Image 1 (cartoon, rainbow, N blue to C red):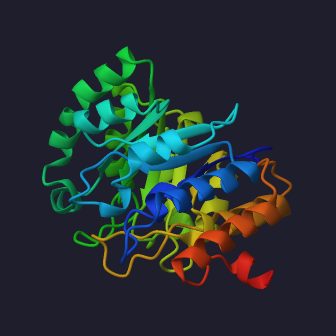
Image 2: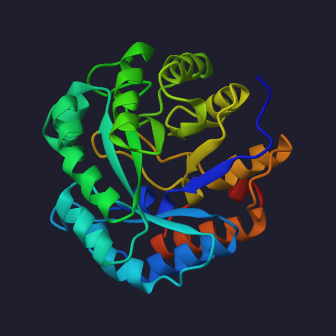
Length: 298
């Protein structure tokens, strides 16, 4: 299959990138400024917050303030993660227009992460999906550990497809396939996508690959070759997984944009402005960027 002519980027840095940041809670104004800069760079989908208990995820405790502090630009989706009904109600009150839910392929990972089985996690989403639909919100679904699990090792492609199909049947308009611990390789990524796309249309799938073993861009190219046209990425490569030892951040949005531009694939993002946004947030965090492109550009 030919490469897609355009790719829709899902920027997850303000949520997935910052939620496990150690140390002091990042100021709301810094989060809002980051989101504004990302929108100014041309990103049209920004996962901006997570409506979860501040007890468990302190960095997301100001989700309402962030979502109400953003200057909403026409054509930009500002989404939030809502793992339960309470979170969903908070998102609705804050004017969120799209939400996301998450589960995993691995039973062990799901137990460690949200203290239930995969089947139980899906059952929990049913009332949430009904409420979101009633409120006119679209719901995106995440499936973690599609290429490997820190507890169970390699994941068989045929195990991923039913979970993705269940989310689709529940009403998720798009399913993001996550390589949570970044152990995937291009052939594994292709085989996983082939298995899932037999049960879920390719145009309803996205790739969410971490770069722990330096394979994320290669894996993305592999699935682009299969026709996949939605990619999750995090500015400056921010993020990680607290349940996966050694799991580094998501693939850097800057590096993905550079790859897409080199392939002649449209994504609508100004790379220079994106690099500046990454420099802003890493400066605020006092850390080095996880983007090879940003570092190469000085």
